[in-house]
Every structure is written in C-alpha cells, then in structure tokens.
Length: 585
Figure 1: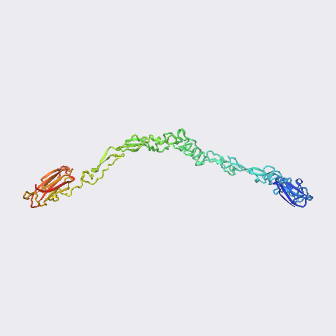
Figure 2: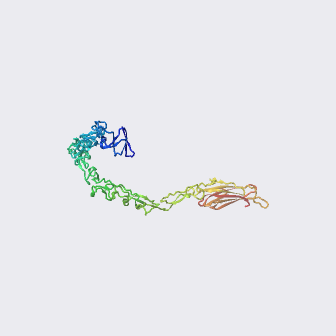
C-alpha cells in the first residue's frame, strides 16, 4: 500500500490518500514516530481511501493500519506486529526528543536513543548525562566539567601576578581536571613582576626594576648602584657629583648645569623654575632667586638688549648742522621692566647729540630753527647773498652767487669771431682787436707808401676800406692826377692859352676814432701841410695847379694819415676821396 500526504483545500488542512483493497482502515497521528500507533493516537476508521485532517503546528507523523490487526511476534520491521500500539519495541529506538527514549537514555544526533554518558563524557545538555549535569560540554557532578585540564574554561588559567614588588616574586594559576571537575592550582612564576614594576628606589641612584623573567632574584636591594661616572648613572632626581650621585638642588640653589636642578633648569647660575629664556628676564635677582622675573627698568645686567638705532630722532642744531640723536650701543641699552628691552621711543628722546644728519651750506642756506627736533628732520632755507660776474667782453655773465641752496658756478658766455662793432666778441678783454688791417698795408712809412689809383680829369675816386688799426698804425699814399681830356679849360674871348687844375683830397674820420692827422704835400717827407680831423667829421686839402693847353698835365701829391687824439685808431674804415677838376682857378 502506498500512502501519500498533501495539502488539503484550506492552508491548515492535510489530505491523506492511499490505494488498497482491505478496508476498514484505522488512521493514527502522533508527534513521535515511536508511539504513533498507540491507541490514544487513533484518529478514527474509514472504508474509503481518503482522510483529511487539521494537525497541530509542528512536525507530525501519520500511521495507517489496514483491516483488523492480528497479533504476532514483534520484529524490527517498522510495523506493530504484536498489535500493542508500539512499533519495533525492543529495537534501537528512533526518537525526535529525549522524552522519546527510555530512562538513562537520550535522543542522539541520528534520532536514535543512546545510553546516557558517564562523568567526563562529551554532552550537549544535562539529559545526556547520568549525573544530569552538563557544563562546559562535558558531564560531571557539578561546576565546570572536563575530561582533561585543557578542557577547562580560560578563567582557570590566570597569568602570573606580582605578589612582592620589592623582591619581584610572583605566582600564576594553572587549571586542573579532578573527578571530571575543573579547578586551579598555584605555580611559582615571577613574570608578573614586569619591567614597569619598581622593586627598589635606591635613593639618588637609578631605581631597580623587575625584569618580567619567570624566575627573578629575591634580593633586589643588592642590585642598586653605589657610584656613577655621569648623570645617566643617577636617579632622574639626582646628578653625578664626582663619582657619587647627589639629590638634585632646589630653586635658587647655585648650579653649573641643568642636570643639577630639580627643575632641570640652571639659569643665571641658579636653579630656576623655568627656562627663563625671554628677553630681559632673570632668575638670580636677590629678592626672587630661583623664580624667573622681569629685570627692572633701566638696567641690563646680562647685556641682552642690543644696540638701538635712533634714526629719525633729532637732537637740534649746532651751527649749520642738524644733529641726530646718538645711537645707543648694546652697553647702554637697558630693559624696560616689562620683560622686554626699552623701545626706541623710550630710549632715543633722551639720547645725546650724535652725528650730523644734515648740514646747511654756510653761504647759501640758513637753518630752519623750527625743524631738527623730536622726529622732525632738519630743513634748510635757501638764500642768495648776491650776484657774481664772470667772463670778459661779450662773454660777461651776471649770475647769482647761490641757486637751489648751493653755490652757483658762473659760466661765461661763448666767444665768437671778433668783428668791428665796438664790442669784445672774442672775450679777451679788448674790443675790436681782430685782424682789421686794410689791404694797403704795410704802408706806414715813405718807403712803403701805397699808390692809389690814378685819377683823370674831372673824376672823383674814393677809398672806403682804409683803416688806422691797430694803435700806432699810419698810412702813406701817393695820388697821381693825370689830365686825360686834351682841352683848355681857361679861355678869354679870343685865346685859350691856359688851363688850371684843382685836386681836392677829403678825409672822413669814423666815429669813435678820437682824431686823425691829415697831411698832404708834394713830397712824402717832409710834409708841411697837416690838420686834425675829429672823429665823425671830414676835412679836405685843395691843391691848385696851373697847367698848359698844349700838353697833358700830370701831378703827384702824397698823403699821410695817422692817429692823434685817443684812441687814435679805429677798426672801422675811414674814407679818403680825391677829385681832379679842370677849370680856371
């Protein structure tokens, strides 16, 4: 017969179906397969092949009996052979929970009942132990159970503890398993006295510490040092003095190095409460030795304050010079009483005179007395005491003695080529001293006279480029007059037997020449006919000649011109004109 179980119509309903030809059928339901066919688990009988049921929540088992049960010997075949409601009794019992098994049995992992465990056996819960106590995964009478000591919980294993820091001695706890029950046993172990545990402080010498070794010497005092070579061989609160450790010194005690002091600060040769490294601080002041305080105002025993520049501060005028306030050397600079050096504004206004910041030009500037005080820089007022001249002639320049507060250099004008203009063009101090001699030079004596162009009848000739220059110059000329008309100019009513001539020589003296002497005669020397001609005027000499009509007449006169009254020379030319006229004179 085949029995199948499916869901019924409703979600909580179960449907059983089978195929068989032996009704009636008895249906059983149980939560345990071992007792499913017990009379108390019968749901009822049916002659059909379908049964519906609404079982309780959880796992359930169904059992179907075909027809009337005929008892026989129970065998392990999964059926109730003896019809007593139990299946395969006497065989290894299948189970789901411990309650499915006999006393002193429990339901094993394979859902088969097994005998309960003795003490030390491995268990999952107390129902599996004969002692009814399962702890730590093992069976025992009580407490934590075990099979061997290593099965015991960590609480039974305790690390070494330091029982005596002074001797670095300690114990540890190891687990034991006795009567399948966990216990602990003490064991000598000094490792609990670690390197951070001080055993002996050794006074001024370095303290002795335990070593964390399992076995450590108990006489720790014998390990204390008794001498030193340097500070590292002493306690942190001591220092090495010679070969002996000495306790560090207190505040204000004399010291020569930081390690001598409790505070580790040796400042200003005393033990100090701080590094006292600020400016104008000291630790050795009489009233506060050992305490870092500000140095009083106006002193600097340690020479901490450097030189002070008083640039921008002015003492006042000294003559023509504005003096700065003197800079303060480091030896003169002082503290201000507030933990700092005196400021420039505190030091400089009282400083004495220093170097000259400004000096006015003694000739061209006057000190401005409202300046050069406090922070006001000195100032000079520009002055000019007068004028000066330089250069000669046309180069003469007049300039101020001072300009812009400084002596002014007078620069003469630029010379030019000397021209005849009554001025000193070349700036040598002498007007009109250029090369103004005329083209007739040299003709300053009778041996070198200059012959002027010959003049003919009724002609006028003029020489306008002649000069008496330079001083002492004189000109000698020869004038030739020659008849060139072949006529008689002087006739009576019947006869023309006579001819007269007149030679007029005129001298015009230039302005500024003083006066010239104007001489003429028939010979060059001596000349007996002279007259003075003033500058800017003209004078003349008239010579009359009695000629002949039947021939050409020729005449000669000599002229001498030279300076008379100062300056008696002039670069401007004089004019010498001469006219030769025919007629009756």
